[in-house]
Length: 235
Image (tube, rainbow, N blue to C red; front, top):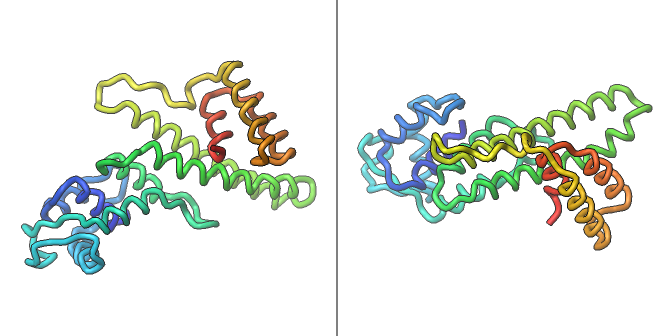
C-alpha cells in the first residue's frame, strides 16, 4: 500500500488524529495489505515536512495530534490519482488502491479517474499491435510474448470496466446498472461507433490501417465495453 497517498486520501475528508489514521489504515482498504503501524507516524512527519499536511505542532508521533491536508497535498493527491504508470511499468495493486481511494476523496470524479487509466491502457495495447503483427510468422517467441502482453492489458481494462459498474451501484442495496461488460451491444451501437471512427479518420486522427483494424473490431463487438475500449483514446 502507498501509505503517503492513503493518508492524504483519508485527510481529504477532514482533520484526523494520528491514532485514528493508524487504525483506519490497519482496517483497510479491503483487499490491500495493511501497513505496519510503525509506518504511519514517520509517513505523517514526511508529509508535514513536504508541506502536504499540517498539524498543531505537537509532534507527528503524538496519537492525539490532529492533521489536516493542505492545498498542496490536495493537488498532489489529485495528480497521483490520475497519473498512469511509466512506460514499461506493469499495472499493479497501486492501480487498485487509486480506484478505491478516488471514490473516497471529496470532489473527485471517479469515472474521470478510471477513464484516464483506461485510455492509457488502450494506447499501450494499440502501440503493441504492430509489434504483435510483425512478430507473427517471423519470431514465435516474440509473437507469444506480444499476445501475452495484449491479453494482460485487456484483463486490466476489463477490471476497470467492472470497477466502474460496481461504483455506479452507490449505497449498498441500490440496484446497479450492469457493468459495460455485461451489456450486449446492438447493431445501432456498432453502427454509431463505425460512423464515429470514419469521422475521426476524415480529420486525421486515425490512419487508414488503424481505421480498418478498428472497423473490424467494431463490427464484431459483442458488448458496450468492447465498443467503449475501442473509442477510449479518441475525443
